[in-house]
Length: 139
Image (cartoon, rainbow, N blue to C red; front, side, top):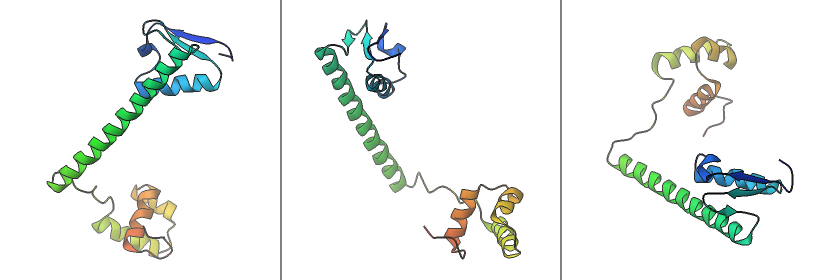
């Protein structure tokens, strides 16, 4: 689409998966100076009232996201207080950690350790930082 065009859909749910997704799409259209019109809902961003309706939808979506985030954080905190949720288990512990440390002390590179022990580089670096390995910045 090019500047001055109008994207017309039968219904809003034909354009986006969710309200935030729809708003993202319509905002990107607006950046390209492309208008949007939904026939069923009567939304038309080429008119002042349609633009207002679009902004109201945007404000509602932002409010909904904030409430959802607030509920998730509160739920996780409550579950943690009740002991139903704990930290993620450490990926490298025990004999595997000992073997990795022996390999590193023996001169094996971090890349080779990752390949040979089947661990991701970020996991290795975080583990080394956790145990205070020299040359790896801590948390």
